[in-house]
Image 1 (cartoon, rainbow, N blue to C red):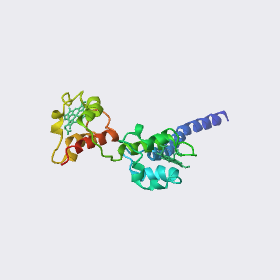
Image 2 (image 1 turned 180 degrees about the horizontal axis):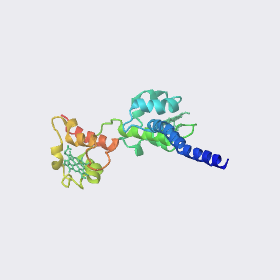
Image 3 (image 1 turned 90 degrees about the horizontal axis):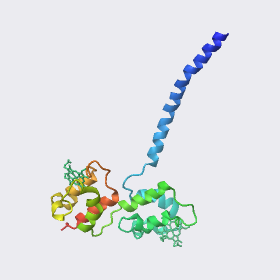
Length: 196
Ligand code: HEC
Ligand code: HEC
């Protein structure tokens, strides 16, 4: 009897690890899908913004928000900090008469503001202050002067310049995180100065 009890205890115990690992196997695919669902693309376009935010949360009051040009009136220089579209939701002022957006939703709005193409004049000085000095000059010591970055600019075809190709691909800044959509747009606008 004692022996039987011991044996059965042993059996139960030896079964446990199996069951635990089964449970892990079972749970991991679900975990993966969840991560995928919450992943937000680096570049958020108007379609994603509409589906995830505007249609469910804004359009009941802002009928005009089906039109991207109406949204763009509330976006300034790809900069969320000065763009009413982002500020209105970040502060919780919008959506009016509804709970504030959750952090994932705020992130979608922020990335849209950063990645939508807004053309404006970006001078070399602004490029230097916002990108070259903080992100490049430690390795490219001479990039603090415009003449020295000319070899990265294709004057015939500015949008194909090494300056944007190397950063867009994430190859540069070497050994550092990829530039943000805001920073890449700043480079694209700087390169527009060379358009004929
Ligand atoms: C219940 C109605 C309602 C909903 C829902 C709503 N808004 Fe508004 N929104 C308004 C009204 C009314 C104004 C005019 C200014 C005011 O009263 O604050 C406004 C103004 C704005 C403005 C310009 C003024 C400012 O505050 O910067 C922005 C930008 C804006 N809304 C964005 C949004 C976004 C984005 C959503 C969805 C996440 C949204 N709104 C949802 C009613 C609404
Ligand atoms: C940690 C050092 C480092 C940093 C930071 C860095 N670079 Fe580079 N970069 C290099 C090296 C080294 C090369 C030589 C080619 C290589 O190794 O890929 C290079 C080459 C380049 C080239 C030409 C070759 C190519 O890949 O097209 C461009 C353009 C460039 N860098 C742009 C930038 C810009 C713009 C920044 C800042 C946003 C930056 N780099 C930051 C180290 C760096």
